[in-house]
Image (cartoon, rainbow, N blue to C red; front, top):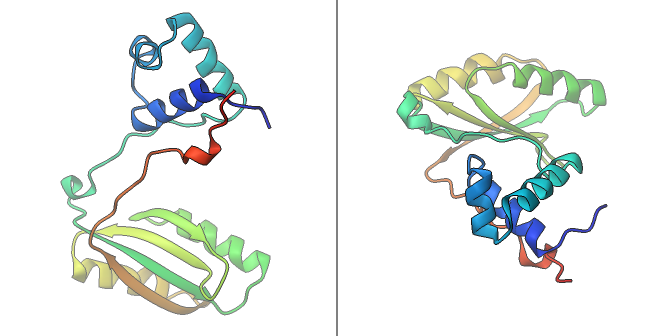
Length: 158
């Protein structure tokens, strides 16, 4: 793995907080010349540290006011069963994120719907009908807080 310095981590952190920042503003924020900053960003992309840029969507503005985490346990725990179910989940509308887990449950699925009634119907229609599903548990999300900071213990001073 390539070694990153404090400047690389500052660039990653700034882009993680705002992927749309211009190179000029990023360079000012980091304290580099724009050309040096651009080269660093290119290097970080080439090395795979920077992959995709996303826009955060306000789901409630889209009418998806209720979010939940759905824990799913499968009857059998074979590779083909996992792959088949993961593929199925990835095609479902309203699924925001899919986590494949170790432990008691096999998947944790973040879903967003309009209301408790629509969530109930969604769960019944999309999860309960699947023969490979042994257990479902749904937890409502009251609040989600993301930490965009990079842990300090990853930053190596040169």
